[in-house]
Image (cartoon, rainbow, N blue to C red; front, side, top):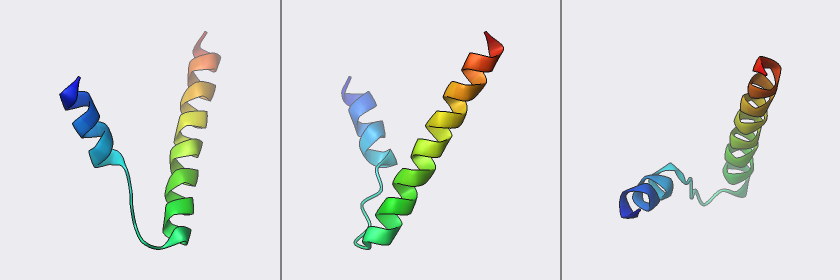
Length: 43
């Protein structure tokens, strides 16, 4: 469990610029949406 949390923290992006934070979250959201779309099409 600790290893999982450590990896999750490593994936987090904590830049000082709010624009970078927004674009990072937008990319993560789009990646998750694409993954859900692919999984739903495979069913």
